[in-house]
Amino acid sequence: MRKGILELCVLSIISQKEVYPSDIIDTLKEAELIVVEGTLYPLLSRLKNSGLVTYSWRESTSGPPRKYFQLTEDGNAFLGELHSSWDKLVNTVEQTTKNLQTNE
Image (tube, rainbow, N blue to C red; front, top):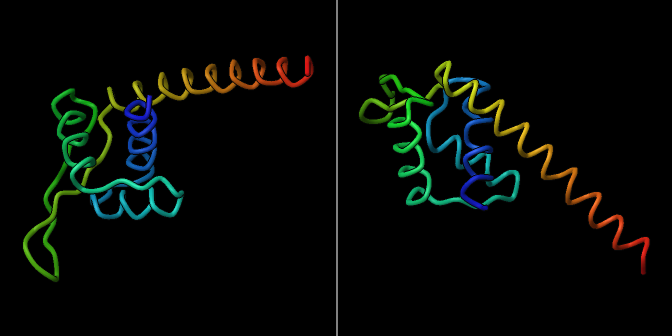
């Protein structure tokens, strides 16, 4: 389940603008979702191989060129599906836990 949630969060971040992986990690940390490079880079590779993201190289003022990721059209569509699934899951959990709390 965490993998799916992480995918949703990463694609949501990328959907806002072209982004460098360390910026993704920083954004996730700010949201208290701690992710390390060893988790993020394989996920980005899977997303790229699935055609959901692409990247472009940009020159860096402090070192070698960097990969900046952006969503593809398929990535945008998939992100919409993930958001829909997430909304359904949240609704189900809220209803289930509300019912349990009322029965106590």
